[in-house]
Length: 119
Image (cartoon, rainbow, N blue to C red; front, side):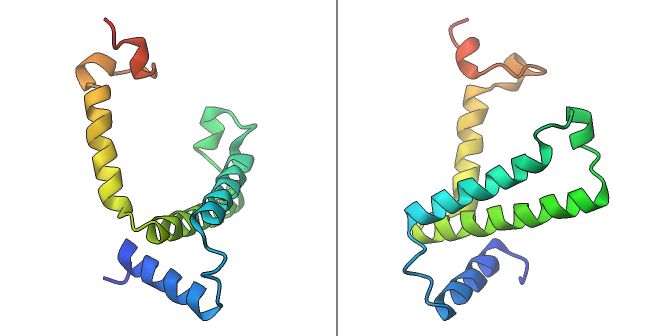
C-alpha cells in the first residue's frame, strides 16, 4: 500500500541514504529536529483562541500542514533509527491511557490522572 507508514519509512530511508544523511540522523539529532518542527506547528496556533485554531484560513492551514509533514517525517525517522514500530507503540500507549483514564471517571474532564487517582 503506497500510503502506509511502512512505505513512508522506506521512502525516507532511501531519501536520506541517497544523500548520505544517515550519519546526521542519529536519534539525538532527529529528536531535536522533531522538537523544532513541533514548535513550528505551535507557532502558527499560539495566539489564536481555541475556536479560531479550529477554523484556520486556507493559507494558514496549508502552512500548518507542511509543518505537520515535517513532524511526521522526523518522528518516522526517529522511530526507524531506534527500531520502534510507532503504530505498535501508539496502540500500547492507548492501552496504558485507557487504564489511567477510565471513561466513566474522566468523561468531560481534562484533569490529569493523578488528580483523581486517589479518590
